Length: 150
Image 1: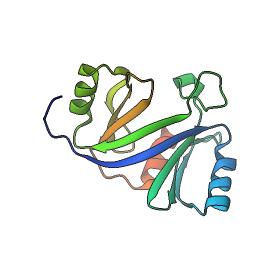
Image 2: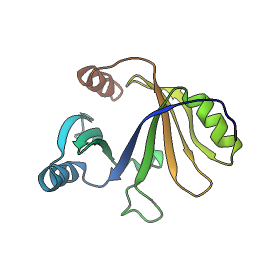
Image 3: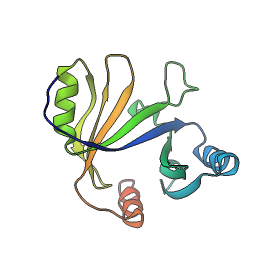
Image 4: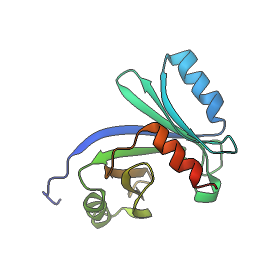
């Protein structure tokens, strides 16, 4: 394996669900999670939410079939991606591809201040790799997210 150092700083389980509002209510009510923030489309569909749960941040969104992001109740879907914050997503993706991963979404800069990509490892699991390119507060993220639908 390549010995080039590219530190992973944080790991986030990222759930894709049908009924994000109900899922948030379940995780806060049953498990005591605390909602940190959410991004909501003008239509009301939850595009992203973050919940503090114990010593992790649980991320979740509605499924987005139009982008191939499916909840586990959809046949053939896993409903989970593991999101890694690292030093350089492009470099880490290159290493993963060389080791047999498949690129699902090419590295790109995103409105939420992160450069990220998504790949599938040789065992069928999806990974989102990202690194911060800009510090963006939740209110600004929501403004930018809403603007994408105008």
